[in-house]
Image (cartoon, rainbow, N blue to C red; front, side, top):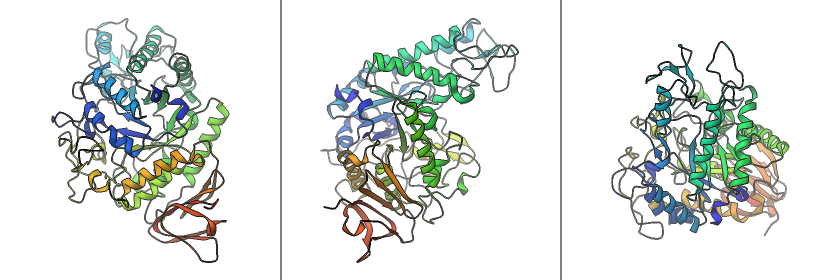
Length: 534
């Protein structure tokens, strides 16, 4: 199946993240499922995406929306069966779309049989146990007694991949080559191979930096992932692993094919992404709401932080010598959407243009292509609340399909989701309202994806020359394709050599001053210009 060979296509790949319980329901139970996703493959093919990444869809008690896995080898009944997964990968492959799953590598649910067995067996080293109370540990169940180390929520016990630094005073710090850590490495290969056998093209690895504990510089963690990458390239060529690390300059040289800039991670704690998109509609850490992002109407931000971080990552990837790309998401299931707080869908257009034209792998979070918003006040569900100021449920509301016709985008309007309430705004955007509107955000995103696929100057490996990082942000790809972006409300201008004779490829609120090479952009305007002319 050609679509399984994703590794060779990452330079032009557009990824689309699906939160499966919110995307499309095929059986009327109110929760999205794999069959519902399969029914929407024609829409995704029309949009032009190359690969879809599904948030966890394995057996789980759903204390953390599926990131607490109780069986890594079986699809959760709410989503269907393993046979449904095989059908999904087959049908997607026929449309040239690869399927990636979410690998929760660092922990399980406390309901997983591995943890239950470990809780009863003092000799079981699959998890991190202490016989005495220790900071960050939780009282353990079962005959073993003692205390276990969680990896995120208390119901997510950390799988034991060892410690980079041992200490006789802390006997739970096993070395990375102890029997438990080696068994867990083998289990990761078993899990990946199982799903590769059903047609899956790769994995996004959750909390990829969290496996080896107390690991200065992530030295042992990188050795682990290099080992996994060597196995992958040898046994399953063409498959990919993409990390949730948040620091591409470290994660890609550590063995991953790609890593996303995220709202957290790295020496800067996620500042590059937040300096682009953050809007204060929901905050995870104090002070986030005060950050002025580049994509802000007030024109108070600057993309320089992002550009510097991207350059550092690109240089580190090149120095490592085994390839890989930086990932740039519109948003995700943990972060506020592009449309949130004061930013509306018209303002988000410029953000989409940047995502699709920058030398990185774009990832579109479901619904961002129509301007779905972060919905404040959405009820907390399945571990969505991270603190008093932020609930992730607002980014996980149902996909807004509207009254779609039966063809060519699927079987018509899907059953209403009851997993979470939909956006109550009566003016909420829908696919149905935008799909035939040439001026819609959805059609812009589709045109941008087609442009990215069709113009080699937008390949990740094509050069970029940054001309300005503020208002406007301006850069040239491949020597002759200029991108000029104004996410602010005030009009801006920029001298651009060759602008007077350039051919507009995609533009809005754009003009060139007569008799000059000065580009003018209205508020929220953008232009992609072919400086080579017609």
